[in-house]
Length: 294
Length: 323
Image: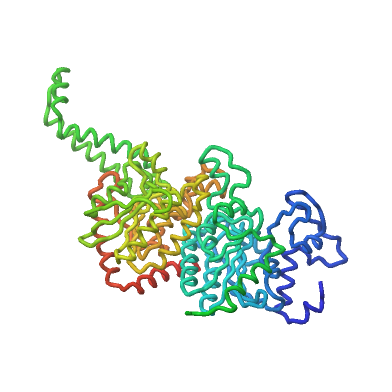
């Protein structure tokens, strides 16, 4: 990594890059023993530095590992354009659920995040956009009040500023510990998206592994354009619940990105290496050479 | 437990009924057995029985959340077809999603409420076991939600208020449902409902669980029956996700805050409709009267607002839930 590039752009970019490196696991000083990471599918083992160079896509089997929020943003946003939105907003124990406060603290310490989503505005391939990334390391990326609020605020920001919106979903669904409030976040985020789209906004929904439950049944399914990462699990009910209900084994590849592509719910399955290029192409298609009201 | 109380109350009901209206067969039976039909003795027993029953029913005043979950799922609770029949006139059922099929687990159509044409729809559970199976206990597939959306868009076109009845354990978790986009169907409903410019009132009549309930429940006003429950997931599902043990559902009920009273306090629902003591299944008529009054009041209020204000009010209602 080019050190000069990091320090040239002030504290905001520097903190962002450091957070991205922490998420990628490459923030170890060089004098420490290297941190190894093993592919979840084919068990190929390499240092985190090597994994970061392939964007955590296994060079051996092509498996796309889930990645952290800031790291994902660093892959998508142009250098020096990152501005975080509502970074301080955190969830609280709305139901006074026993033990939830401690769990939240633990998750915050583990991931360095305030809740399961990072929202930002910046430029993608030179085009200004609002980008939200759900982080599956924090409570499985589940949507509680904080996630719902941050996503809604990001959508409203994009609506007011007439910016395109990209949301990377990765979620186990609604956050159980926040009960009915989590459920209502589905209505809240969907309503915000509806307003955004009614005003002519472009929303690209990018589905990553895993996108299930309440997030699938709200903003993740409402994209004008829906992209998905290879082999990502995408569905409403979990495979285990379905197997219990129908009493039979599900076919191989069921609820995977390619399966959804075949069934008409995804526009394209995009490997991580082509992610930024594809997004740039789409954003440019919507912002350049358009004739309004013709 | 409410279950045992209700069982006893029911048997007392039968005995009181038999004593108050003795059928000829009863008398014949007694004569055959050589018993005397002693009227004064009977009157006394009726009184004691009624007193005993009322005493039992008094215990139903302080129900635990688990009791309410039991009542919300009671097989004798009024179903959507009954609500439509009792509260509305001129019902015309509309079927099919105009894409591939008709999901019977959502019942809907046009009807008149106090003379005004409205669109009414709801989850259909069915009242017998065969019906339950046919309607998958009120668990819709994507076609059900798309049918609901078709009806609601039509209501928007003709300026009809929309009234929905929620009573479902959730959206159906089946293989075909997933293939045909269960998540997308619900998401679409949430988004579209939030932007409609006609009044929408949702009534949670039994159990409302997960996105399956919310899929027809984005409303200006949410009314909830006293013993109905509304939650992010069924208590069983909740327990199995959090503790990997669905048998701890009783414990889950206590902490989920899923009762009408909790939700009213949290500001999620606007009004709680009182039920007869011991649950709605004991006296449908009394329930319909209470619901009718509330429904009329809210609908009159909403009908005074213009379309834009209605959409705005609905957006704000959900916007402020949470942080």
